[in-house]
Length: 316
Image (cartoon, rainbow, N blue to C red):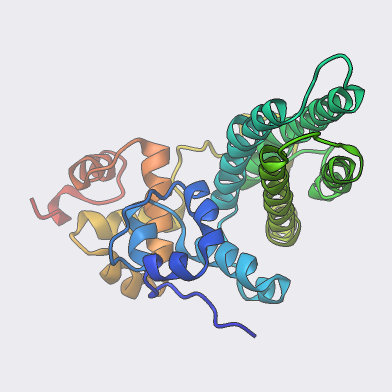
C-alpha cells in the first residue's frame, strides 16, 4: 500500500510527486505559490477543511481502501464546494476547450459526413454532461445543504444521486472509439491526436470526479441523513418557523466564542474543549458565516449583547 499523504507534508513536494492532484488543489480553491508550507498550513490559510483535503488526495492516490479512515470526519460542506468547483471546470473550461480543438482538427465540410457526425456526437455528449451536472447543482447539492441545517426532504435521498453516472461515462468512451476506428484525417494527424489525448485525460478526470462522488460524498451524505433522522429532521423542503435559523449559534459554537473573546488561541481552545484545532477552525468558519463577523472585537460585542459572556468577565 502506498504511503498516505499527511497534513505535515509540504504541499509542493506532494504536487511534484503526484501532479494529477493539481486539479484537486484548485477545486478546493487553493492557488499556486504555496512555498514551503505544509498541507495543514495551506488549508488553514485557504479556509479549507484539512481532513477533507487529505481524504480526497489520498483517495485519488490510493483508491477506495482509504475511505473508511476518513468518511466519518470529512466536511460535507467542503466536499460540496469541491464538487461544485469541478463542475465549473468541466463545463466552462475543459469540455469547451476540447470542442474548439476538435473543430479545428477535423474537416467539417459537407463532403465529410463522419467529421460532422463526430462533432454532432460531441455536442450531444456535452449537452448530456450539462444536464447531469445541472441536476446535481439544482437538486442534489441544495438537498444536502438543507440536510446540514437539519432539514430532510421527503421526495429525495442521496441514493437517487448515485445512480446517474454510467451513461455519461459510456458516451465519452464511445466518442473516443469512433474517432480512433472510423475517422481518416487524410493528412497530418497531430492536431487530432492532441484532441484524443485531451479526451483521454478528460475521461480519466471525469471518472475520478464521479468516484469521489460515489465513494466519499455519497457515503458521507448517507451518514448525515442518518444523523438528521435520529435527531428528528424536519420532513419538508421548506424551513418551518420553529426550526433554528442558520444564524443561530450552537452551544459548541457559543463555547468557542467565549474562548475567543477571552483571548484563547485556536490551540488553547482545542485543548480546553478536547477537540482538534481543525475542528476549532471549522467552527470559526461557521461562526463567521452565520454572523458575518470576522474580528475578535466584533465577536466580543456580539457575545456581550447576546448574553454569551458578561461584560465584567471580558478583559478590554
